[in-house]
Length: 212
Image (tube, rainbow, N blue to C red):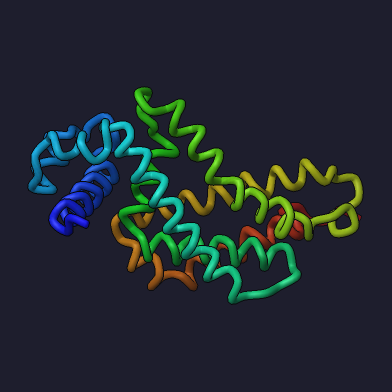
């Protein structure tokens, strides 16, 4: 094993991750990566073949890192209440975002502002990697929401879709609002969860007064 090459490979990987997180795919050149990693440009192509391959490798690794962290947090809690489960999901996502700020920013870039040059491969990768989280959402969490637990006259799938949209929008807004200030997000965690409680209260009981 060539320890010097391994160390250079790691420098390339970390430099690329930081630069992709800040500038996105298109604005991050291999020259910039080589300069930050203090290696030759040819060494980047030797290890990763292309900028696209390097980018997708960094994305793949970042997802795995954050998913593993999420899984460890998730299995330390237990509840059978649907809304408490959703609240727990948002809370743990915030914890993981703080734990891995660079990876979180990188994935936010990839999800919301993908470059046309990597869009197709990126979409396939994100779909593949999202299966575990989708299964957790569909089976473990939304499996708690049944026709017996919602108001009569409300379609179950309509309710599920509406709740997904609201919780996803809330989580994305919070992460975006505290972008670059993730420690502050944890400091304000109780305030954020109190806001989420208010949203849950509206979802549970509505906003209009009952007309007798």
